[in-house]
Length: 85
Image 1 (cartoon, helix red, strand yellow):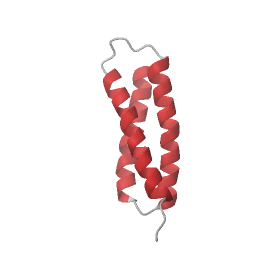
Image 2: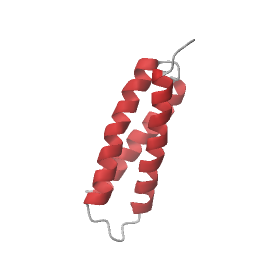
Image 3: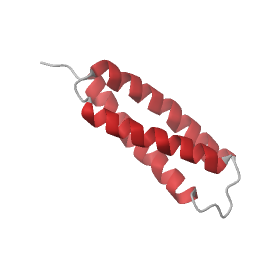
């Protein structure tokens, strides 16, 4: 389960980051992706700390991806909720 969730979140992360950079001015998309990232972050930390992953080689990558996803979500919230003055 740990490795499966990691790969699902990793694929989402890659798609999300690529799509985010090509649609920086699309506020609706940025807001939507930011809120989906909040759910992905919650799921990621819940799985990381709730499931046994002793000796799993992706454990370090999993926690790093969760923290980087927090940064990406913050950037998306910025681009989604900024005002155009």
